[in-house]
Amino acid sequence: MPQDNPGGSAVRGLPPLESPARPSLPAPRPPGRFWPAIARLLLFVVVAVVLSLAFAFVLTALPWFQGNDLALGSLVLLPAAAGATALLLTVSDRRPPAAICLPMNGLAGRHLAFGTVAGAGLSVSIIGLQWAAGWVEIQYGALEGSLTEVLWAPSLGVGFLVIASSAAAEELLFRGYGLQQLMRATHAWGAVILSSVVFGVVHATNPNSSTVGIVNTALFGVLFGLPLLRQRSLWVPTGMHFGWNFSLACLGANVSGLTIRLTGMEIVPVGPAIWSGGEYGPEASVLTTFAVVAAGVLLWRMPLRANDGRVLWDPDPPPGGEPPPEASAPLLHLGVEMRGERKP
Image 1 (cartoon, rainbow, N blue to C red):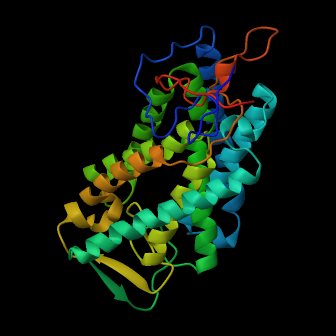
Image 2 (cartoon, helix red, strand yellow; image 1 turned 135 degrees about the vertical axis):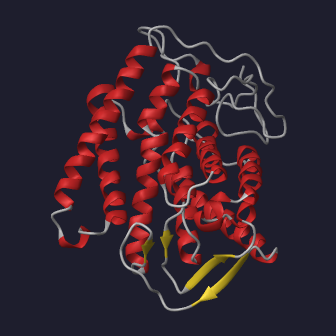
């Protein structure tokens, strides 16, 4: 008979918070899933690229986007990523958005809000420590600049829209349908780490990129992947991504090497680049490295309610039968031992 799990997670099969899971051997990849999942991943990439080119062709004809490459890129990626996701989920998998950890319920709003506060809190904490150590200075002045890739000073509302679109698009691209098909084909941890490395390398083309900045960006990819594994939620990392980027822009710090100014504040690096981040921004600071690792540990231990339901990377149910009870366990593919159940 199932037993109560007082103080534990709300999701069946997740170990109690006060009793961390012990590592065990990774779950074997179910036979017959590798190539279909990889084919869907490649198809997702192709559809997303085609849609992004189509949207870019349309938007570049509008006067506001001419010479405004930063806004253009952000607003093109979101409909392309969302369109590719919706098309593949509907036509190929015949599954709802909840299958990629995007349930449309009340928990989604709470996860999104939590992620936004967590991301903003992390950036404010890091900049506060940099300022206290004398590695950066805070300056105030009039907004200046033009709409370019390296200096962008829109209104606060436009900045909010573009940064939110960019964060949502990157999460759909790097931790959405494609990644979760890779998790389905291989192993959850390995897929998250691989996508995080790609996430870091993609940002290497940003202005003033550095080795520390690329490594930290990859670590952010792992950090954003933790709620996907632990809470089965893509809303949390989307909120964290937006909260981090938007708060940096409001404070006047460079965001991944991009100089975006939404207010009269400006964070000026004056200390060693290894601690201040230099012109790339706080993401290139060793202080951020330690902060992201600490945030990951706290996030993994956070008693945040998880989504309960089948997702793409769950084991397939037996033919003609119901899924086994352990099939909905969020950590079944994470290589950890399952303990504890709740009453049905």
